[in-house]
Length: 186
Image (cartoon, rainbow, N blue to C red):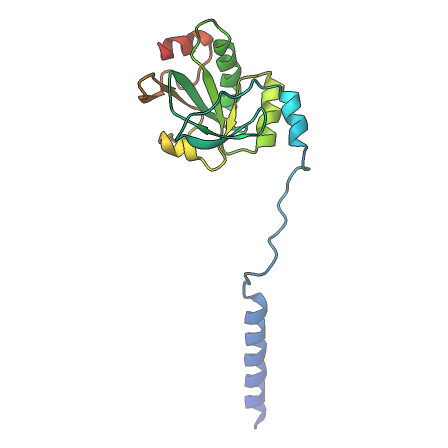
């Protein structure tokens, strides 16, 4: 073998070794993702002091009651106001206290905030910080949101009438006063 052929073989072997070394592998550990320390969800539930979720009906979407952690099926039976929200959503943070104030009024339609796109712990922390005590649920797999065909934009509020008809409330897009909520459900 001549000198030129030997160098060609060396370059080819090094090239193949480099490709093998850089080739992605399925068994490679995932890069670490930044996360906050795990918190005791039971302690967060106690801190949030949410009102109990109502007993669920048959055939509803599978959700978790944020107040006590029980799994339940939330049926779309009205009248009820369903509000989809997330902890990162700034308009949601302004709207939740308004919904809580509305729900405390005599004759108010029950309000069910539905946490999506966030963790239960983050949702409980935010509700405690805002002083919102509404019976709230967590829809991790987005089952309820898919059922009502809710948009990805948040907040999204729906009124479920006594006859089961579901309509999205878009005027106003974000509630800023309990009177707006009252007008939207009547």
